[in-house]
Length: 41
Image (cartoon, rainbow, N blue to C red; front, side, top):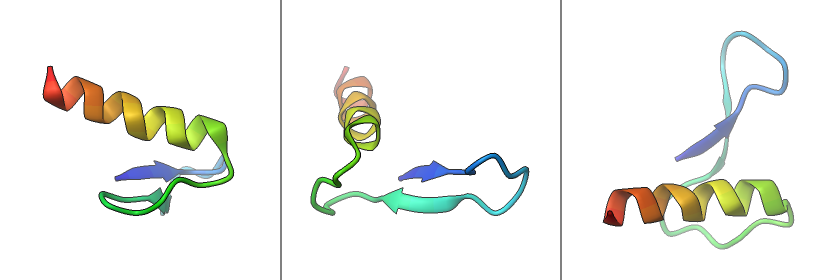
């Protein structure tokens, strides 16, 4: 799961989870793909 705190200290907002389609935000997609690459390693 990729989440953002949007400058808050609590309650992060989920922005993409396993199996969900890509978002319009390149940074979120890069984080998601990087996490998958790390897991596969």
